[in-house]
Length: 249
Ligand SMILES: C[S@@+](CC[C@H](N)C(=O)[O-])C[C@H]1O[C@@H](n2cnc3c(N)ncnc32)[C@H](O)[C@@H]1O
Image (tube, rainbow, N blue to C red):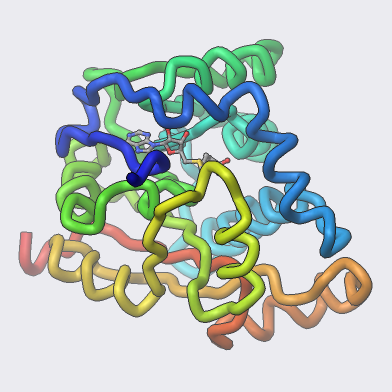
C-alpha cells in the first residue's frame, strides 16, 4: 500500500482530484512539527531555507525578478505564503490535487492580495518561476519525468523551475521521513537522479545546491557557513534549478 502517492495526470493543468493529502491536511503542520521536534527543529526553518536559496538564485548572476510564480503541489500553503511575502510584486498561485489542503492554504494566506490557490493551473498564465517543494517524491517514480516535462507547458519562454527535495544521502532526513505519517511508502530521489531526469526531460540544470546542514544547537553557523557548504551532499534538503534547454527543444 502506498497511501502517500498521488494518482497523477501528466498534464499539470488538468489533474484529477486526489485524496491522499486530504487525510493529512488538517494536521499537516502538527505532523511535521512532531517529527522534527526531537531534533529541536522547527518546520518554518526549512521553509525559510528554501526561500533563502531561491532569493540567492534569483539575485545571483543572470538573475530575474519573478512576476508570476507557480507553487506546484503547494499543500497547505506554508511556502506559498512566504513566497507571496518575499516576492511581493509577484502574483503567486498555489496549485494542489488535495482540495482539503487548498482550503487550509486559503485560510492561511487569505489576507495576501497577490496569492491565490487553485486545483488546476490557470490556463492563461505562463509562469516565470515554478516551484515544486517536496512534491516529486509523492509522485510514482515512473511518472516523475512526465510531470517534470509537463511543467514546461506552464512556463514562460525564459522561465525557470526550482525543485526542492529531501536529500536521501542524509541519514537524519531518511530517519525523519521514515517516521512521518504522510511520507509512508514514498521513494526519495537524489539530486544526481533528479539532474539526470531533468536533462532527459529537456531541461538545462543551472543551479544545484544542498540546504539545511546545521541543527538548531549550531544555529549560529547557519547564516555564514551553510551557503559555503551548498555543494556538500549532506544537507537535509536540496534545490535543483532548471530551465528549458533551447538547444534540444
Ligand atoms: C509533502 S507535501 C508538500 C507541500 C508543500 N509544497 C510544502 O513544501 O509545504 C506534497 C504535496 O504535493 C501534492 N501533490 C502530489 N502530487 C501532486 C500532483 N500531481 N499535482 C499537484 N500536487 C500534487 C500533495 O497533494 C501534497 O499536498
